[in-house]
Length: 501
Image (cartoon, rainbow, N blue to C red; front, side, top):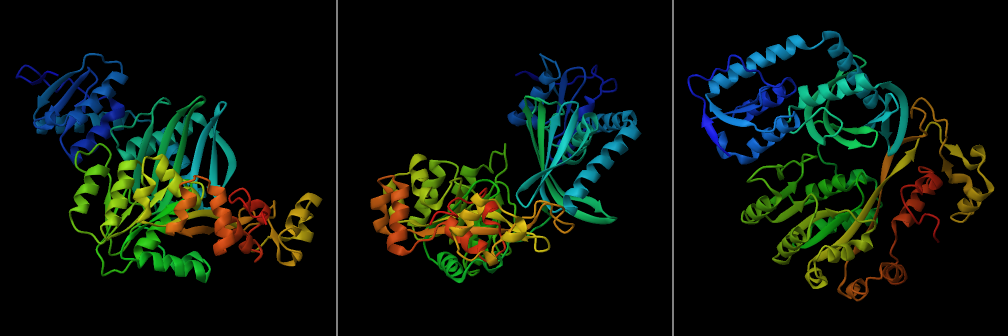
């Protein structure tokens, strides 16, 4: 790629930055070398930026998507580039339709304020004909609300992306994949300002695009293990795990199952006199007294592999890895445990007993697990019944089929409570309010590998039940249902085995 300095005959006065990328260029200038992708198909960079090939390639791709095939790259003075950016910013500001801008802002605020009021964890936006429909995920349940004008929704999303995130990878068309985070975004709820961290993900679909906005509390701190409302036996197990001097504990479950919260709580519960370190992508929960590192996508030095290698040289006592994504990460983590350290991580696996098999599928030999794999844990979040409107079995008027299922777990149905499909004001008509973490765990023994290596997980689980009185997630969810705080029939959507006796 040929890169030349601009000469005296070259004037920036007649140039302007492509309007939709002014914010991205400003963001880049504020955080590093100044660049400007211009409407004539040229890419201007300041001296030194030519060393960052990844940066240049990103902006060249932007120009190519705008229809420029032969993008010329020139080096200009930083001061001249900042003047150009300032002038382009002013043009964009004056060109923006004030009424549309206000409508977009109001729409976004209205959607996010409602999400906070009904305790939604995520906002889903998808196209439906000529409109866009907004869904809210509350206590794990996705609820549909009123449709919005597609144009207005697109403008609201674009505003969030281009104005508040300022990420150079972002595009406003339906064929782009976009991710971004806004920290400390202020939303007014009934006149009261509320700060949230917003994480946006936008991907193309056959209908146009699908956008999901996750709302996290800003600067959320880790829970204590006692906050999870587990039984005493489970709490004793978890506390004993993190008190080990070496070994590896793996927490499993699908996305949104509560793995991150439990992992943070276990890391927090480790003796604070030990040197505790984490590598996460990204850091979601702040853990007091723990040095947490974030993987930075596109960075030369903050990749997962480099962070892990650098961290292992700093002599930590314990290491928490946000997720084991491949065999190399798993081997390094288990290897670190083998040298006398305690490690924690997560995997996307359906149940605790499948963890060794999943590691083996990733390329880790069973022999590498024998001396280091301490325990496997699986978690799910199950919606709690709304205390104000939950129904008795008699009031719910259940079908004969469901009554038979309920009688299979207890002959006395007086303590069983079921979901009210109409809900009430407290639960916003959902019938559920809050969620309970349900857990299963296996403390690995050497003899377990006789079953693990056969890759017959169901035979192993039967053996655990017969010889160690092992309790599955379904068994534990059944106990909670018998307390009248979750609906066992509704909970089957989240946990299997509740009615398997």
